[in-house]
Image 1 (cartoon, rainbow, N blue to C red):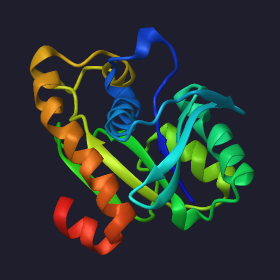
Image 2 (cartoon, rainbow, N blue to C red; image 1 turned 180 degrees about the vertical axis):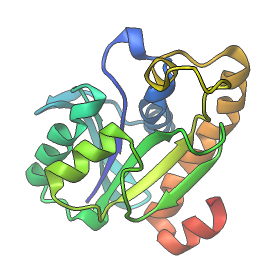
Image 3 (cartoon, rainbow, N blue to C red; image 1 turned 120 degrees about the horizontal axis):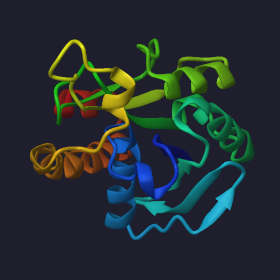
Length: 186
């Protein structure tokens, strides 16, 4: 079984924020595969199904971003998920808007949601699919205000091309593994 988690903040006020790109991408993947987030389990909304012969649990933590680890650790325990079967999709300030990168481990690079997951799991050894949101255009712009602001219409246009690629990368990881996915999408 694979656990695929999209990071974001719960509530309609955050729905189109840059920080919610993990939710946005996971929602697209779920729709493409007919999966509904039809139940609450612990601190997350989840949907379960089979995708290309693999059992998957899709999850959107209902904690705020900085406490995502609480929801993820509950799900890892509930479903007895090995960390090599955990994929976390999240925003990344250090990637240009619309670029995606897959990695298997590493530091949180300042991302509070990923930091929370690492702290709760006691390990950095899980897959991350990072989706670039770029940095603010000015050095004086507050990073927190930036990630909690909505995408502009121009940025949304770029993302409409990126989001299907994220879904394809998830499917590729499920069916072909890490190396093939990294070669194709990194």
